Length: 240
Length: 331
Image (tube, rainbow over all chains, first blue to last red; front, side, top):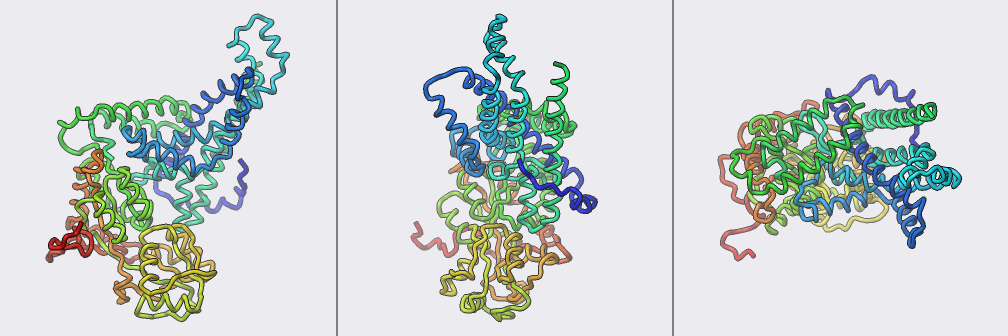
């Protein structure tokens, strides 16, 4: 993610926080909950796929790769529309009544986050030298052992993949607006409003200053998550 | 949607939601995966338990999904009046601000229970196609034609909206259109049609955005635009545009009136529509108390919406598509 950073310029705006009690906290929570869940699910799905693809040769592998790479550039609005058709009352999952819920938002962000996580993890896994794999096998490791060794070796790349997926999920506005509906309760507690849709709402009303304040919060949040993940990686390195 | 049709089960679910939201943000990531799965299976459960919960009387704990236009939401009106309805019935109202065209489309797909919009032509089509029932006139305000103080086309104080548009078109003065199938956009297109002018050319720009953004675009380009009075008032302090042609509230032409209607989604078409709660909502919002609350709602010291539902006189046309007559062989 490349986001312009001008925290110094924004500080005065932050001092006069123009929102109701609990509002910003609740939209931060919804943003983290939706994007965090989507990224966790994406990661659980992507890493096995990346490892299988990195280890095995099978017919159509290049096609799968091409699909994943295309998915990285898939417009979030289109994903939102597709998920809308699926969860809408008239769609295949209509009976579950997922439209305008966090679960629908998680579905669309899962679709958005999975391609970058898979592609970058695949690159990281492929980058692990054959000698490491061979050594693990030679020491009598099962396939699972070998996979775990590879994950350990590739953990920085995988962390980058997770961060890229998280960045894509938390910064996208198109799909969560369509399937989530940008809902808060009348008392201003978010139900399906995220930081991005809140920014969109402020901009729609021409309130560019408050929109910028929320933008700063979003950037700070992404920075914080990056810092935490990098820190985990470093601790892992020290414990090695 | 009748997401909360089964109070016992779903109250538990919403309670656990609140608990989660009170947890610290650090815990959120860890809890997220599990809670997400729980949420999915909860929804699955309520979808499958079908008719079992019907014997539980009342609407308490249910959620009403209201799709509406950006002007009712962005002015803060709904947030101001909804708490009294939510307390009265012990329910939650999910207001989704989409613009009139999208709000009706969501309802058409069965994704909302009740719609509050402001484009009579589109509402009538919705009624005629069987998607909406029990329409009521709700409230009104008006549209105003705003532009830069320099007023390059010289429209200030004109008494006809169509003449104003024709004058702007002849002067080829910049005009910003919402271009988003909203109620305001629909009104604008109707006015062009009535004026017998086909807008087009460099001077006519469709922004495809909400009213607030459209006003900002017009402000930056020194352009004219059609705005609902409420949104203009709420933004007036930040822009240099001024009202050049008033709507009927300030003595302007009747063609600039902006009536809002409310309709329930037809449970005969979408059986999952929460019809009971929709009708409770329509009953409440057209009641004297809620209508007073609408009248009392102010922004920057000005009243934004004028209640219209409570009247001594019968007004049968509010229940049916405009021009419909019981004597005619309509459809």
